[in-house]
Length: 575
Image (cartoon, rainbow, N blue to C red; front, side):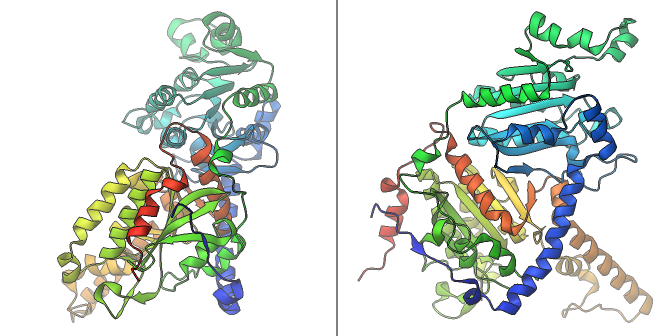
């Protein structure tokens, strides 16, 4: 069959979940998502209104004001890395968002990666993890072949923390290696230089294909203060490396413009000269369509208690166009859902963990818990992942997993080998992969389902996400195992020793629970962004359109000759 047999999935909200549970879930989640909104606002404020006023007093725009003028009217900005360095102190100072904004933004109808120094935070300085955040944005652009726009206003390294941002494999110098990788891959890079551009900040724009400088901009290896100290020369930084020097003498910049607004208009023109998006071609005549069941209902479907379950099909029904989906191998490895749906008219593969209790088809009878990887499910996901890669179908991984099956039977069935096959597949896929951690992301299951170590283009977390090897209470039991009996009770009659063990277990559990917080993961770049559930469909649209925007750099087969058709044909039940 060459036709993709998309079928209706999902049901109206009142049929999918009782109203009391829906309202309870929504109210509990609203508290967490309000916290997310407040945390975003705090990062967006930078160092506060006083510093914004200083930028405006110089006749300049802030980083986010520049991005807002750059993007297409009526479109949204999708930031990644918002919470890098959250709650991290550098002496008495903080660096909201690590002093840099990285965002997917649509410019002249083309998805673009924008990397902008936050000039309200220490004049756009680079802090620990700033360079890693910049490189992560560059890597996303490289993987999808999206043009990159650098909005540079950077006074160089934040020198008191130079030892944590200058050296090392991913130190500040590696940004320029990424510049070079993008150039070598033919990815367009355009830079606007708006002010300070010192040392590494001066190198950052140079490899770009176009460099615009405003009258307030300068690019220098060393600023005026350093030159005065080293060479006893009294010069301004504009004298040393302003637009007069680099546009008209050195040739290190291309165009001189009067102000921020003019530079941004010119950058938009440059983007318009690039090839237009190939997404309309890869829709194969289909029109984009919203899910039949609205994505805003997702906030009521997910219990905040991770021990409670939900219907994964209902989630998919609120992410794919018209709630139509082709499930592959539905009768095998039922703990997993794999299949294809359209997002904005573009085909995307989906892998999701079922929840609750399911039929144990491997043992020909009985029941077992879902949210765990068993032999058939692992083989099914590996096969689907390989087929999507062969067909050029981007994959979205919807994780809510407790890990692999364990025990004597699991080892006898060779789960280590099947898991290794899945890990190999996901490590070598060339098709774009995106990972969403819906709730649990536990143990080796997190790895096997294209977790961050397996380099998805983007990994998202929600406010319910918990990344860990094991839960806090379980880990506390493991850590104090020698002090416990076979029933996991404290094995001592000494009151003081018992109290010490209880306190140690409590502290261990609390620490692990804190480490599982999604903001902790985001702060140390173990996930790319935290999102609201009602934003997930829009992120799916970004993933789909950006995956198909650029043609010619990866295999993209037409749906008539997909490997998935062969797989479905060979596994159909015979009459």
